[in-house]
Image (cartoon, rainbow, N blue to C red; front, side, top):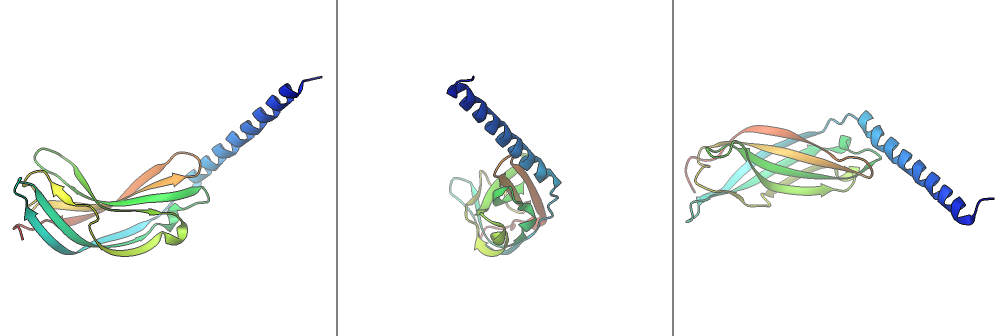
Length: 167
């Protein structure tokens, strides 16, 4: 007959194998979901646009963010991290991304929202590169599953321009 230790080892190995198989099936089932999120970001006001004594430009915006991210949630979704980034080009960098707002959506019930807010984080460019510059506001999201790999995507809203003069 087999000893108690041998039987406990066999039972634990079998249980962990079944658990790993269930986690793999849960992760693969997320591939069957084809999300169709929607979002719209509007700039309601440019509160201020100023140049600091050190030469850096700073902008304060009032944003209207409307989003429906409910399709990102499945039974395997733990939470969704979402943020809005201002993206623009400068002579030294082909892509500058500055996060202006973020949030965590803990459940599907909170994934359809409308927020009117000033930028949560300061939009500062190192140098006087922002006057008259075109930029995009991009809504990024990272879906954090209970098991499996995390995935990310974004929606780009383009056609914005910084003011020509400081105020």
